[in-house]
Length: 260
Image (tube, rainbow, N blue to C red; front, side, top):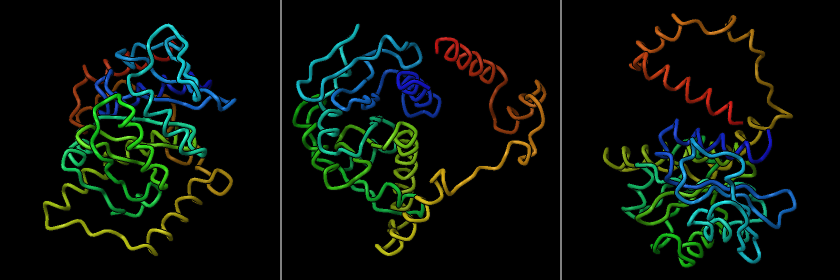
């Protein structure tokens, strides 16, 4: 899949998973030559984007090239890329639970085993949206090695070596924020210690290494043939989803694939 297609796919996935309403948040990817990034345009719905809509931004000059203005948070993305040479993809979202923790200006420690991959999630000091000050505040936290940072009274930013990793961490950051809020309401969130974090980080690095982890072939999962209409109806009842919403989701996915 081309880099441009990857961005479009992640944009639609952000909407599908509830991390975006379609226009909130932004996505970027470092270009192969590493001197530029591709970023989503300002104010346009992820579900309606085409590859031509993405904007190219020079990391050194900030000059933008494309049909539209780049995301208003392009400075945030540029500052993070300049602070972290290992980062090749960034996802910024305004999901509810992460935003709640950001409003409380709390930091999320490593609470569960799989969170070791991200590490502690600090909250950067407040600065107005789309400003150089906001970009500098976030980049300062990422320079310390964080893989996810909350922006005070704003939202969350996550990074990855590729877009798949950044998207996974975007989902995980929202889940961890929800766990944190719930644990705090039950008497206090108890963090893993440094040794436990180190052990778990190594485990998940090996687990996700394609050279060490081999997924089971499709046949071994008990999946046989295409999904039938009755399968969808049955799933809808079990999951509490209406048949109409299932059909709507399938149509949107089909349109998205046609655009690709």
